[in-house]
Amino acid sequence: MPHISVVPPEASLDQRVVITVSGLQPGAVVTLQLRNHTLKAEAHADFRATDAGLVDTAAHAPIAGDYEGADPSGLFWSARFDQGADTATMIAALSTLEPLSYTASAAVAGATAASVDFVRRLVAADVVVTPVREGRLRGTLCSPAGTRDVAGVIVLGGSDGGNLYAFVAALLASHGIPALSLAFFDFDDLPKSMIEIPVEYFAEAVHWLRGREEVGRARVGVLGFSRGGEAALLLGATVPDVAAVVALVPSSLTGGGISGSDFTAMAKPAWTLNGKPLPLLPPSWDAASMKEVQEAFAGGKPLAARAGILRGLESAGSRVHDVAIPVEHIHGAILMMSGEDDQLWPSTWFAQFAEARLANAGFKHPHEHRSYPGAGHFGCLPPNLPAGTSVARHPLVPMRFEFGGTPRDNAAASADFWPRVVTFLRQHLAA
Figure 1 (spheres, rainbow, N blue to C red):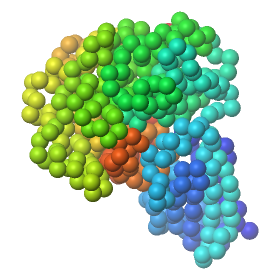
Figure 2: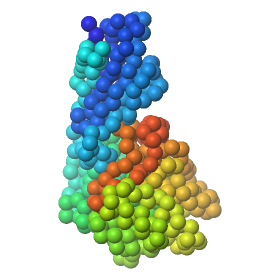
Figure 3: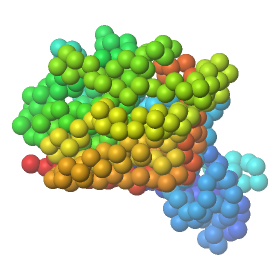
Figure 4: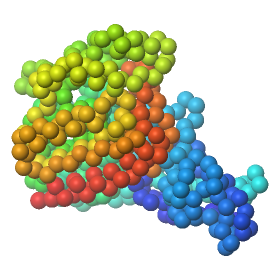
């Protein structure tokens, strides 16, 4: 009788998982289906059994299906979302920190021959999850049980607001790194809009984390996604206690605000420092950009904002330096990641701009920018998540956006970059 197995059966999201089917007729064509119940996504691939009656996703390439080449993660990242689900709903589901529930099944001649249910965990068994509501700080602290005086990390989400990236903090904690997922707007009693958020709020989180016994006097780093990557660079440039910065698809310029359907927020500063608004590069109000926004807002056409932002950068010329984050003031190592096909905004341009400032200043600390051809804005997420869509609604702005990247390239970027993040933080936060 055919038998399907998943090894290991309760892996962490970022672990390698191999699906095999044994007991097949030699040469039989087998359809493997992987259903992600939690994220509402599904992938299929056809395999030809070996002479030993075996299919092994780590060693065998499918002969047809949703991905190509031998890849044990193929069925995970190539999964296509059900109608109504997308990356936004995926991140919201991940924020609950509940295990991801799957069913893997093998069908021969259209009939299910074997199936197995399994989970992938976001929170390791030894990780303690603590809601944070102290002073004005709001978020979630994830730390291995019994941790004392270990370097920690602050995790910042993007313009989607809330406390959606606690799952990233949980994954870092599973690697022994205490991590605080810090909400900074649209969560609990925090401001509803990302307008004039004080940099001091993030600085307060650094000092709070160092006051915890889990971290103590150890070093603190910051990791941010998208607008959170912008905030991470800004925090690192402002607070000397930040020893390492990871900025994923970031901007290296201080930008405008986010406030749902109120597009005038884009002309208001997102950040303040010492009570004063930080300058921002004015948004593009040229005719082409306005037409693109109107079509996206009124007609449901996904907005690829990258082109308009590039036009704005070109027209600004040397004025971009007036709104540049002084990354050269960061007191530690910097790791940046960008997708060269990022259609939400030109993250590669922004990272290259930051790199140029570091070079011109003779920056003494280690710094690296890794750009991924074919990857989009979502190529920065942890690996093994469905990467089958480049279009998603925004949780706050009532529009759909084009985020760019192919599923394979986004998945490849995630698989390559995530281990580098863990290694970078361990190396540069070590005492």
